[in-house]
Amino acid sequence: MRPWILAEQNLHHLRQEKWEVAVLPFGATEPHNLHMPYGTDTFQVEVLGQRACEKAYAAGARVLLLPTIPFGVNTNHLQVPGGLVCSVNPTTLLALLTDLVDSLERQGLRKLVLLNGHGGNELKPLTRELYSRTRMFLCVCDWYRMGADFIKQLIEEPGEHADEMESSLGLAFFRDLMFPEQADAGAARPSRFEAINRGWISITRPWHLVTTNTGLGNPHAATAEKGQRLMTLLTERLSQFLIDLAASPMDENFPY
Ligand SMILES: [Zn+2]
Image (cartoon, rainbow, N blue to C red):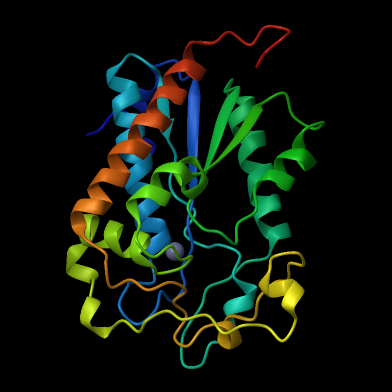
């Protein structure tokens, strides 16, 4: 039994702890090129959540990892031929988060970290929506943003989805579910609009048009070692924040 994971707890143990911080991971269930499992985003965010909470808990922080939400926003994947996608709308995530915040707050929890592992889940607007409705401190960690500076140095061919970075994490943490020899090159099809290609205009991209087999970014240079190095850095950064957050009193100037 790992005492920092809610799903492994029993009431006997929970009653003896006073929890300072909860971590709620958000994943997705969607295709990742031809070689990675549908659960990729969920598996990755879960490994990070478990490791970061373990490290923070060992350092004395009363941090609790909640179960991962396996469904994410991927309405733009629904026309991918032949695949199955379990998608929810942003408003559904908001409804779920509202209920969870309400129930956790009733039991005295005041700090919640939303740990996101899927690019389609935009959680920041949800925290703005809830800002005036709750006294709970809500914050967002998109792990790929938290590690962006390191990822730039680590990854030879930067991509977005089922790319070298994600494939490296897969090789490191769920090797049995990886089939690198099946991957395509993850090439992106350009839009007819130059402003979209340059990033001046953004759209919800129809995934069946922009990709060949849902991958964006060439995964061929992925290695387990890169995945391990990235996870070590992410764990370090997130656990330190959890330790600091747990130790900080919520006075009138919090979080400044
Ligand atoms: Zn992914």
